[in-house]
Amino acid sequence: MSQTEVESLLRQLAPRVLGAVVRRYGNFDTAEDAVQEALLAAATQWPNDGVPENPKGWLITVAARRLTDLLRSEQARRRREDTVARWALPQQQKDFLDRPADSDDTLILLFMCCHPALSAPSQIALTLRAVGGLTTAEIARAFLVSEATMTRRITRAKQLIKDSGIPFRLPGKAERAERLAAVLHVLYLIFTEGYAATTGPRLHRVELSTEAIRLARMVHKALPDDGEVAGLLALMLLTDARRVARTTADGDLVPLAEQDRTLWNTDDVAEGVALITEALPRGTPGSYQLQAAIAAIHDEAPSAKETDWRQIKALYELLLQLSNNPIIALNHVVAVAMVDGAAAGLQRLKTLASDKQLAEDHRLYAVRAHLLEMTGNAGAAQEAYRAAARRASNLPQQRYLNRRAARLDEANRS
Image (cartoon, rainbow, N blue to C red; front, side, top):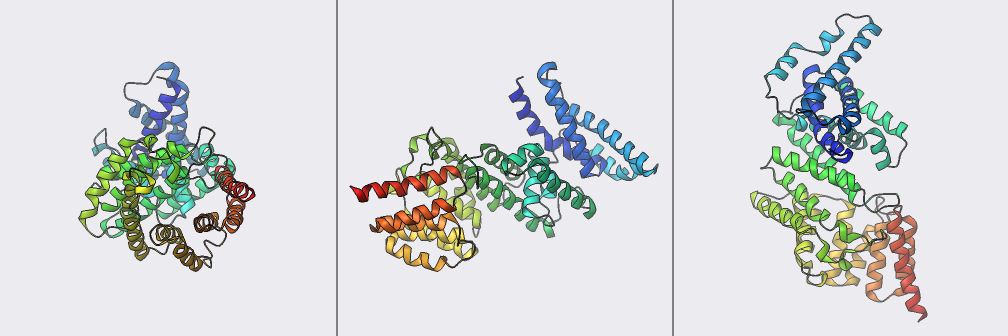
């Protein structure tokens, strides 16, 4: 098995191994350190020695041995002979032994990492580390912070979980809705950052969007009747299906209207459409279902000109009733412009300009530029494109916006 194949296998096994070890020993912080060392040992040994017959069992054994060493060290440091006994609770050991050998605690682990007591950045970092199997260095690179900064963020999150005494089990019905909302929000944020990176030289961070889809699949498998879980997975698939067409060979951004739709992943489109088609009739749709429905309309349109913008506008209006998210309002402005004309869109855009969350967001200026260009006001559109480019922190987005401005400048001169 190649190094890449080993890394892929370890990423899949990491949360299952961690879940098993946490269930047995009852300490997330130390167990997570032990599992990371087991993963490192496997990444070093398996490409040369071969993958063991039971890779999960191998990792659990190595992690348990390392955990024992860590606990003994802690015992010596604190001079308490009962440290291990307190960390390895008899009931937790019984629960562990009673579970099938192939049981998967990943969902429990995901709920734990997305505990509402943690901040969103901490939830994301801990989820990617514990459930996604990414190293601290990989997570730090993804979010463009130093490894030391990310280490502190993850350490604080693990300490909070340890101090809170959160039991290692799925939350009860009373709190499951809140916790599930946090889980879905974290997966949505991870996917969004992977699909449209906030900063950096690349438009995509494929490792993040791919991991978000994998985790969303896992949640959907565990909760197949939840409409919002299905909606989020559908939204991810329908959006990610366009990824290859979103950039040129040089990494430059290609807007949706100009993309080569033959490059879209038809399997992902079909799966996403099937998911949202099945989920919508179950009851009142939530935000992720409505966003997935919008994505499905875009993906099913034979061309940009044949997009059903009236239906998209209606769906955004339903979304606005559920959320005051300014980006949703901004997308609604685009839909209004496509249905009622650019002037109507610009008029509605004025009400968003005073929103503090959008005031310095490049997307506000990019939409204004596009609508001004649609009205034929090239000079104002050129200025708005440049204003958007100054505010964009992602290099492909900056280049695209500056090219739009330069194109208008050339048109004016000719």
